[in-house]
Length: 338
Ligand code: FES
Ligand SMILES: [Fe+2]
Figure (cartoon, rainbow, N blue to C red):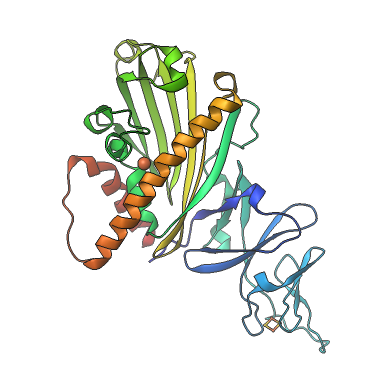
């Protein structure tokens, strides 16, 4: 069962190139996306109202889209404006148009009742060209249900094991130190200190060990907005468990979005980087490369986990204290499904 009334990330803005129709699927609903000549993104149901040919196989004619089966033409508002061989166009000749918003560098689509769409509820994320940061971005396609990816992001204890050699840095703290969790509207906020964290690579210039402050918001359907700052040893203790004050010597940013495509397919959009003054393009490439290695570690595990679950979907899992985040979030998802 899907949550209809929600904004979902359909694409990075740069993926929706002008002059092309892009086919996407979100919560089992096929979409055809294109840009009008002024750059605005239009999202139609990918189904011509005539005989259901996909509109993504059609043709753009200025701001309009023509179905290339029998030639019905649609304006950007979804109304049919031409039926070959017929003067009268019935009112029912229209395709569903979904509300679209661009926030940060993501194209968001509201999949529910149009009257309930409120773009101000979209969490703010960074634009990839924000002058204060250097960021790189990509996406991964998963053969898994989106909630398994959400579970992974809601419990970073897995860094110590799944990413032992990449992000975990052979450190037990990610698993041992529980984050402080506070509820958000449609999500959860996680915050914690990881004291005496070893550094590697170009981070070594900060010292052999640092105190790391990790904070992220996780919002339905799978929006992960994380800030990780690195501080001299002793900062965690001085801060008494609270958020650090002042400028950190290194400020890392991770922004991700999980989008359900179908019951066994999801798309994972991600960007990683740091404050511009903290990183040069070469170091950013290294940071992003390690991040991608880690994300592929997650993908291997989660897709295999999905296969194992599907062998016997009724088998109950064992709950542990690690599952506090995923359990709370799944309750929230259940409440949204009602
Ligand atoms: S199916 Fe689109 S015009 Fe016939
Ligand atoms: Fe991971």
